[in-house]
Structure formats: C-alpha cells, structure tokens
Amino acid sequence: MQALGPLILSWRSVLAPGIVALTAVVTMLVGSGLSEDESESVGWIALTGLVAAAIASLAASGDHIVTFGGSLIIDDYTAFFYLLIPVCSAVVVLFSFDYVAALGLPATEYYALLLFATTGMMLMAGAGDLIVMFLGLETMSISAYVMAAMAQRDPKSSEAGLKYFLLGAFSTGFLLYGIALLYGATGSIKLEAVAQMVRKHSIALSPFVLLGLGLILVGFGFKVAAAPFHVWTPDAYEGAPTSVTALMAVGIKLGAFAGFIRVLLIYLAPLHAQWSGVLWALAALSMTVGNLAALAQENIKRMLAYSAIAHAGYILVGMTAGRSEVGPALLYYLLGYAFANLGAFAVLVAVEQAQQSGTKLDDLSGLARNHPMLAAAMALFMLSLMGMPPLAGFVGKFYIFSVALESRYVWLVIIATLNSVVSAYYYARVIVAMYMREGAERQAQTRQPTLLFALAVAALATVIIGLLPHPYISASSAAYASAEQVLRPATAALQTK
Amino acid sequence: MTPINYYLGLGALLFAIGTVGVLIRRNLIVVFMSIELMLNAVNLTFIALGRAMGSADGQVIVFFVMIVAGVEAAVGLGIILAAFRNRLTVNADEFNLLRW
Image 1 (cartoon, each protein chain N blue to C red):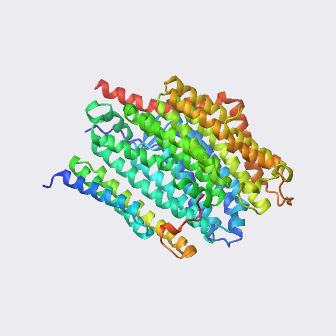
Image 2 (cartoon, rainbow over the protein chains, first blue to last red):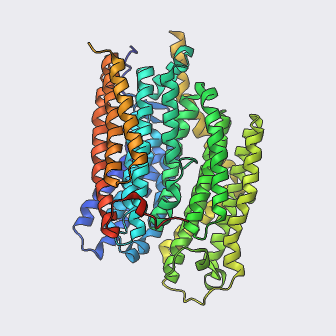
C-alpha cells in the first residue's frame, strides 16, 4: 500500500474547465428562456466563457501540482492545452454564428454541447488518472456524436452521427478494457502509480500489461483517427455540419492527442520497446492510407478528413521516436495543425454560405475572382498543411522528422517524406481550382464580421507561428518539460525509501 | 471462494461476444446492445479485480462506467431514431449515402 499524502485540492487547477462547464449550464438556462430567433445570441455567452477560460488558464501555468488525490495534474503541459483548446473552440464559435442560423440548428443546444465537448477535451489534457481521462474522453465524444447528427432533416448528418457514434462507442469499450487490465496488473488507476509499477521488469512484461497497453492503443487510435482505425473519419467529417467538422478535426484531435501523449510518452515511457513497434506501423499506415485516399476525393471535407488521418500519422512518427526531445515538436506541430485546419474549415463555411453551395472541389472554382480574400486565406492554409516553408506546418513537420531521424527511425522518416510529397498534389488541387479554373459568376452575399475575424485569427496564427517559431517552441518545451517533471520527484522519492 | 480467474475469464468471454456481435450483426439496435455488453464485461472485470486486490477503486469505477453507458444509451438511441426517421431502416448496410 502506498501512503496517502496530504489531500491537495487546488481550485486553480479546475478553474479553466470549470468556467467552460459553468458557461455551458448558463447557456442552456438562458437559451431555454429565449425564443428560437433570439437564441442565436447565446453564442456570445459561449464566446465570453471560452475567452474567460483561456485567460483563467494562465493562472494554472508555472505550477507542478498533482491535485484532487492524483486525479488532476496541473503543470505547464496542462496550462498549454487549457489555453489552446478554448481558443480553438472560440474560433469555431466565431464562424458558427450565421452558419447555425442558416442550417436551422438548435442554437442553445449547439453552443451548450460545444462547451461540454470543450470541457471534456480540457479534462483529457489535465487528467492524472485513467478514469478521469476516460470521463474526459466520453464527455468530449458524446457531445460530438450529438453535434454531428444535429442537422436532423439532413440524412447525411444523421448517418454521419450514427457512424461516428457506433464506432466511437465500440472503441471506448477497447480503451476501457485496456484500463481494466492495466489496473489489474498495477493495482492502481493513478498514472503516477502505474508508471512506478511498470518500471519493475517483472510487472512490465506481464501479459496483463501488454494486453492492456495494446487495447489502450486501439482505443486512442480510434479517437485520433489513425489507420487502420480510421474508417469512421471520412464519413463523419463529410456528413456533419461543417462547423462541427472543424471541432472534430481540431478540438477532438487536440484533446485526444493531449491525453495520448501524456499517457504514452511520459507515464508509459518504460514500455517504449513494447509500444514503439505498434506505433511505427500505425504511423506508416495512417500516412500512406490518408494521403493516397485523399488524392481521389472530390469533396473537400472528405479530403480534409483523409488529410487529418495523414497528419495523425505524422504526429505518430514523432511519438514512435518516444524521446523527450520529441515532446516539444509534437506540441508545436499540434499548434500549427490546429490553426491551419480551423482556417480551412472557416473558409468552407464562408463558401457554403456566400454561394449557397456544397463543399465539392468544383464549388471552389473561380473563388479567386468572386472572393479574392477567401481564396487567398484558403491557399495559405493549404500551403501550411502541405508543409510549405515558412508556414507553421513546415516548421512542425521538419522538427518532428529531424528528431525521428536522430532516433534512427530512418525508414519511417523516408516514408513520411514521400508521403509529404504525395500530399502536395491534393492540397495544390484546391489552389488550382480556386485560381485557375473558371467558376460560375456568383454574387457575393452577406459579410460576416465574426467569420472574417475568425479567419484573420487563424491566418495570422498560421503565419506568425511559422515565421517566428521560437517563442512557441520554447513554450512547447517548457510545457513538455514540466509534464515530465511532475513524474520525476515521485520516482525519486520511491528510490530513496 | 470462486477463483478470480473465473470472473476474468467470463469477462473476457463476454467482451469477445460483444466484439463479434458488433462486427457481424447488421441491425443497429443489436450492434448497440453488443457495445453495451462489452462495457458490462469490463465492469465485471473491474469489480473482480478490485475485490481480489481489496481496493475500492475497481468498484467505484464501475459507477462511472455505468453512468457513461447510460448516457451513451440515451444519445445512441436518439441518434438511431433520428437516422431511422430519415431512412426508415435500422439495417447498417443501407446507410450508404456517404461513400466514395
């Protein structure tokens, strides 16, 4: 039995997610008293709450505390995601305003669910035991299932929600069984205690630990959309309303990777020899399947879904290397990926509304003439996702690949580089359609200040993070180092006993 | 006292039945029931392990999992219902609008 330390309840640690959850409740209460036309204004409440949470996250930085009996960890790593996740959700809210009204989605429920999903993502980043991690994952996923199916009259939306739900719930079963087996082998669900136990050779190689590890990899593999667990991704991304797809491609990825990186790279690092082979295969498969399938897509949402799978592959390349140098590269990569994707989906939302059209590649034809600003922004985001210097996508990719190369994963880096070359084709196709193909003459419609603001935020972030990477890299390094530090005193204390 | 391996074995068996059910059945309701079966197999495993190790964690977790399973049932049946209204079927094979 391990001795119980003093019970620390750090309220600062739950401040940011608490604000988001509370705002969700307020949103529901206020929204229920408003008529259908008025209820769109609850978006502003949601936005205020998210901004407040982002500011409150600054209160969490600079600490290394394991709080609530080990359930929550508060350190710079948590603070990093506590800041990034609400900002991303706030951008989604910004370009949702008119879109929600245009699709006739129930606004109160939309914003409340968006906030609950955000709470779940943040909990995943700060979780200190596997059950809080699981609860965060479910809070995030269940909200997202509903949001995907929210356009009730649209058979595509309900089909997307259905597929997302069934495969998501299926993967939850695997994750949970993995947690149960790890619990059986180590006697604890606290990440810290699990990490101490797997350091002992006799436990680390027991079938319980290995099977549990495998099942946890399957569960997270589903959530981050890594091949071969990606089959739900294209359908869910294509069918869901575009603003929800943005949340799925950015927020959910961030939450899932925040948890995945913390569990695997920091707490299960002693088992690197066991999991690195599996991750190698997942990474290679995700990149190849994602990029090759994206080549054939005519729908941009579906193309971006395959691109998201490929990007999960690039991140997994870094995770395979598993050294502590790669941590900052992963966080930096997520940063660049998040803003480029947010921007791309914001453009799609704008195009859908301005032209009353779908999201086929043909619908973007001639966009450069009809909406030069939108086309320029889209081109910027495509170039960043492609990995064109000096944008954020390039720096992140370069950083991850070089660390993987230092760790002697030469073949994996070769596969990754070849894949990057392939990916240039389908990203460039979007740019070609916008600039070099004639489209129907279309009337520019309503200007939306919030959407333009969201676009500007995403575009600026993509450029600045790429051009001036140093502050962001050092922030990522500090975040990752502090996550590692939380573990170190505990293991040191164990050795001196 | 029944050895713990019996419980773990039963849990693994139920989990396997649930997994196979999800993979081979085409009726959405049955698929969903199979998922619930998987979650309950995990619950059994948690309780057995918690009891064997004399720790309360395993049993407390089950409450959380039950709540999550309940929420999933509410949301899942709602989504299945919405899909049924649009397509008038609960056969998984007929949901093929999204395909390339």
